[in-house]
View (tube, rainbow, N blue to C red):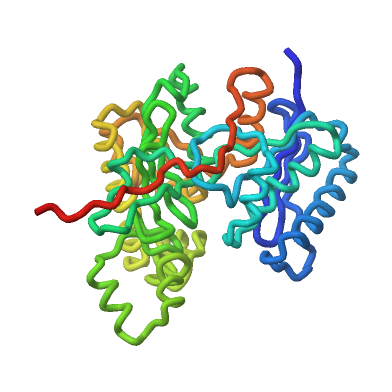
Length: 370
């Protein structure tokens, strides 16, 4: 079997994760810092140029040339909602990514991967974009006209660990059902049915369990009162939901190690808050098991918080009745990017064609029933 070498790119706010794999062997895994340089994520062209320079320098230090790479892959950001899979990066995709007003470092990866591929006569891909949308129609409906539930899940890592768990069961991902909980600074819990994420929590916007810095689901009437209390601006309320909620609001910190130490020291309040998060995670897992009608082959726990044995035990104790619990501490985003491309290069999957047409066009307008 031919062996392939793949370069993966995963830009962050102030650094860029890069990895070079020859099949499953890591030749280079590095997080390249911006070295104190001021970073303006709004300057798209400057960011692309600067990060390409960082990456080329890291490759040169390891004596890796672009000509040694068989394919390039960048984390997907700024795309329109689409199905999961490995997509070849095209000019249409790049045009939509750059035009997207979203300010996020993941937007730079498709462009950088594409330019590297063009310069070496190879192909560039993106895998399981953050904008993956496989929700069932009923999963999209909220109780207020004009507000629909959206798919914002840790797709890249969730899909990778689900593929691994299926392999442990001797199955393909498309043959099994899982509930996957990604537990990190943000938390997402999703129902995976035969290879598709048909429902999930969107902790980014106030849904599902609270997390170290996000509020999770909060009573809507109480939030309305808080909005009109005069204590918070609109921006401050958004921050309370997305970056200053959860542990940040209740404990004043999102430092997992400090919180773990306080629990070991016997701090009853800190333990209560942490237990509440685990309780909410388990409740979300149970709801996704109901979405799958109880036909669940495994509950999967992954993400940075899963490195904490206390968290794993607390959640497992509540959900183990549903199905066997698989534990994959940390994140596998770089491996997920590489493996998605390898499946295409080895002919195990077909690459997807990006149309730019959102997978869901919204509910049609309806007049009130009489």
